[in-house]
View 1 (tube, protein in one colour):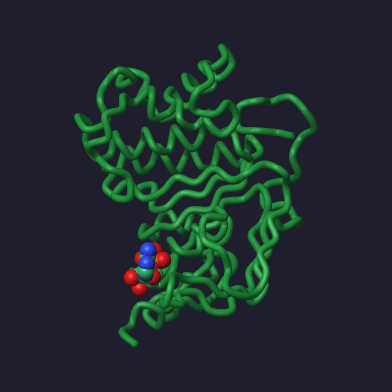
View 2 (tube, helix red, strand yellow; view 1 turned 90 degrees about the vertical axis):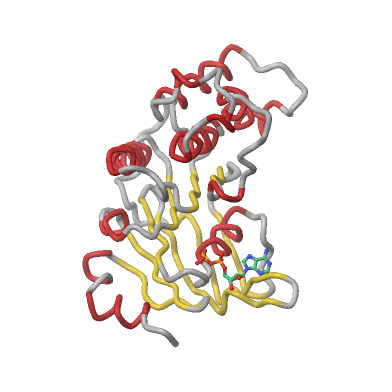
Length: 247
Ligand code: ADP
């Protein structure tokens, strides 16, 4: 299995390869007493970046939760091909800013799935953590407390934690929200590089530029699929106006 950092093994299929990594069939999901997603039939391509876009409350985070396996569908089917659990990077706001953790400890938590929280990390685990921090440009912050960091730095620590899981499916909820343009650019480049390294990336975003640079796009409105496909074709001014106009 090819993972984020190991360049050995069989080469992955071409980016945006034909085999879907995830299929949703007429899938509905939500919270107790609050249906959110309605009858979604969607394919997410392997080795591609897919952007989820839509107005606030349209169900992007809920869909990521379903893809991550933390929210169970109420009906319909979810099929995730591949045998590694996905890495899920939640919105920064969903993670307490006052957790008494250093940046390194935060990123190390990405190894818990393999190692368990109480076992010592191996040398290989520590190397994976170092590589993840380097890729996000936060190695110099390793000893700092999460709560001392700027929002953008914390965001990068959470993304590094996702990378440290070495999954071949990375799910990110608004990874560039609150970042300055340079940091946004850095994340956009990173996501493209990850695909070249053998990772399928799905990210929810408010950033139309980020959505346009994805390989594929899913457009949500009020928990329903308002369109899917190539961002250039999908994200036309008239489609965007329709999706964002008040119901
Ligand atoms: P988006 O990510 O597009 O902003 P969400 O998936 O966060 O949309 O939210 C979709 C709907 O689900 C919203 O109406 C929101 O209020 C509701 N919702 C989100 N999380 C919960 C929750 N934990 N319990 C109940 N309702 C929720």
